[in-house]
Length: 520
Image (tube, rainbow, N blue to C red):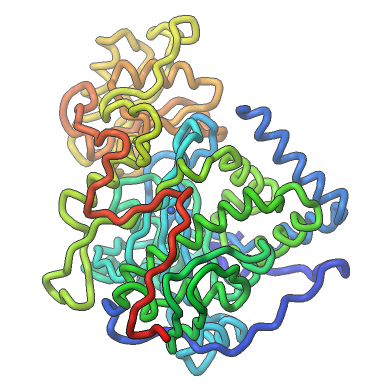
């Protein structure tokens, strides 16, 4: 394994796989004016096995091994997020989607343009967080504009031990150049307080091959457009775009809206929600031939974290999204304000509104207002039934202090003893500080963890089921620095997305607004 996703080896494809399609030499858009510049476990396992068996039956076991060898993967986070990642059907799921502008191959250089040679610094030009609710009924896709100014934390690559120093007040897109996607993940965690479970990154060539494998993505424009920077040229109305044309759509800035990167996030949302509808309606996942094509394209196109380093794991992740309806997917852009230091080029998270949006994710609150209200932060979303819950005295756990405040493990352990959890053990300080309180437990200990959550009034986002957990561990984070029970805070109601955050339902088919300057 390597934490640099670009360095993994690839095996030669079996002869049944065709070569990659040629790409043309469109030059990209890299101008200086940036402002003008997301039934249950048995059935899921059955579908995972079914798709993998389809791959084996059609392509042979060697083909599955070939697909596994395609996958580039690396460390999830270059800093401690607190708690383990969870793919459990009982936990919310957060996947960071990254679109990079790397030009590490001749094909990417040709597609991206604006550089004279292969290589150069990497930027995370597209950053979206896909949040899927714990009950898998709804999801949100949250974008942060590439020119948002944030504090990029110190990032340490676990594979090499190299540390990249903290970089205050820097564009979030630059986080990728601090060692790779693991630093982008850690930057998001530090900014939002959200635990990231996985990342998936795609480059220019990956966009082209994925669009072709899907069979094209339907889009719509309200006028003719000709963008001289991205080279997108389309007439008014509906189109199905694929290949290089799909990449041009995703990179177009000047030709849409007000010509800024801020509107480009909305056209990217249009593309992704349309792609979801296309996958659901196009029969892709029931056609063995198209499954092979999509699997080949996806494993070549994506760089992922080590938790997604095989076809089986990727299919398992996709399975968790299979029942999601487009009208329960909400795409939204983080509320932003002009950066006082450079208001014409940069933005900052809007004070108050941005954190209210992040709080909805941390509290697993639906953004579409169709679902039932999630439990407020400070109370669990699903307390166990009396028959399922063990007695407090039977629950074993270790309490650790990751808050940075002295004596927190001692205080919380004493509070648990007073509540009847007499087997709670003081584990003293956690290995590292963490922002959010976490309760990590093995699948067999779910009922015990829910009983603890109910007693301590922990929010749903604190619970992390992990197959690797050897004991139930409560790590007290910086969000809980006083008292013996978790502080109750106000969590936004379902659908209460700040009005300053542009949003769209996944069931909507919107037409991109063309910038009149680039219409013909």
